Length: 567
Ligand code: AMP
Image (tube, rainbow, N blue to C red; front, side):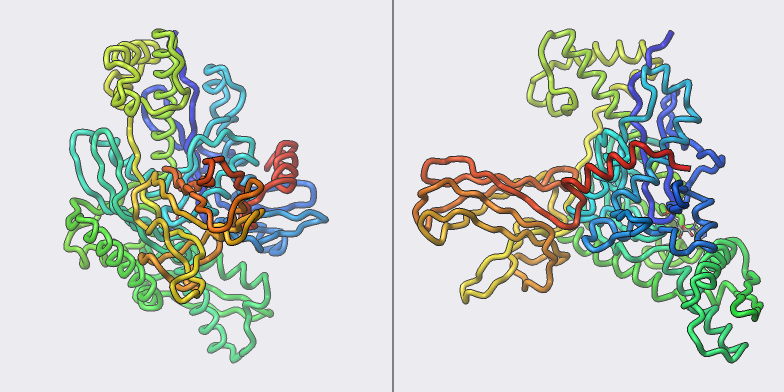
């Protein structure tokens, strides 16, 4: 009997739709359908008294119960002020997202019951979750927390375009190429330049807008329909104030948009206050009222290319389009015109989840190889360390690796090259600049950026701060995130994302340098450590943010989620 490795699932947690995938026994990434037998699940949560309902039923319920349904929660990730109140409870975006994750996992578990138990597990535990390249430090942390609330061991948060590139790169591992990933999803737009080779997927540059996606195209249709309704009926009130009409129009607009990807026109009807207006929406009209949105994506793409040029990358070999909204034919037409290159529409709805699953599978192979090598050499090896780095540092020999790879391939039935290629390296860049509040020469408060956007991560930066008074107890550091590429910027161009309080040891003199190290890891997590420079003692750093669930709230959300079956 063939042995199974512990599966790691890939989850695309999308603004409008989400999906889950795994790599099957033949080494192929497959999407796991939900209980309704659909390959994607609407990212919509319906609080139905004691039940939580996620997916198509929740989306349909939005019409009848607009106040009990939460949609587009991804747009609120990392937002300190978003609280959804239901009953006597308060829910933050992390917990609402956790319900979407739970629905995906529960349905997948049911679908793969036997396969999961063959590998010795009862449940899906380990996952890789994707997020837009554009997400900052807090949004990424919030995504990880959502996974933890859902009860997962979140192995990694990876960028959506990186996941798409992993899926794309896995089709042909012989060629090195630089690809431009244009990803227009339901609520976000990312454009990323990525270097794909056999051993690595390296992000060169990234840009985009996390408030631009298919939903904006829907909204334009809604606005147009309202205008037409007003014109026909003479009604001047804002019919969108009526939640039922609003929901109805949102659903009709999305449907119409999808039909216009296939046909030149589609009938739409608008009903409000007992009046009904029917009209024919033509593709040309739709393109006209959304032209500026498409142009914005082109502008972001040009900006990103300029930044890539500054890093020495002037050329790309291919353009791939991912994200459901790239199915609108005007997207490929416009991109082709702009870059005189025919873009490839690559598995728009599924590439991200599949790429995350392939990435997870490689992690799982990597783990298993480490376990085998460790057993064979009787040397303890960090369980989820990176094999290729260990080989480079001669911590493990090529012979031990090859032997373990051969055994693993024999035991699992996976091909030897696929096992040997498990050592995929992913290099990322920081999508934002981040820095600290400091005083400039004229004693004004400014932001001094320590990491500029599009810097390759991991990156470690040290900065000295000075004690102001003798026996100072604490130092407060305000950590700021922004989208600029300059070192010094005005305070109002950045957002405070965290504060770090240094608790100083007693009796330090005034004006003593405190050395603070900021470490931004591959996943975009920020770690801060500090040393005082008189006796080089480590300083306790307490990092706080209101933007990500933590402490008691986090524990409560975890407990609530544990006892809950999502429908
Ligand atoms: P994603 O986040 O990648 O799942 O993309 C979801 C977005 O793609 C939503 O705005 C959908 O309305 C949109 N979408 C899906 N299929 C189509 C289609 N055939 N034509 C136009 N837009 C689509």
